[in-house]
Length: 150
Image (cartoon, rainbow, N blue to C red; front, side, top):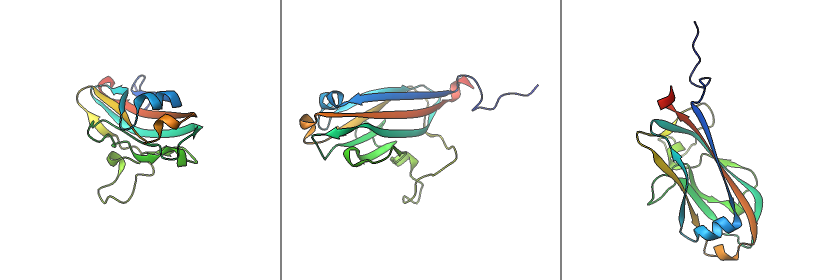
């Protein structure tokens, strides 16, 4: 009897989505961090996408990082200038950069940041004018494969 492949197996692919309004960003604060998701033990990240769903108003210096290292959470998204975005941005973090350090992976599936224990994914907000923001919404999506369910 044929078996399902990993991507077809029920329950192995997880999609996380966080929607952060401008008030959420203000609450996080300049230099602040917030837990967005928890990667399950035995999982790996396939992609991370950020979309400026509603334009940021009131600041031109909103920069975010998304990752798991509290000292510098930039494994998935690194130094993204949100208010300058014109399209969704994917996989700019350190975990997605190839060894040469000058090219990001454009296609295919290569799980990055495989974790043996449950691990928080955090956003870090950097904007000296964060309290001046009057509108905007940012959507962060993470696609994860949970190997523990295979």
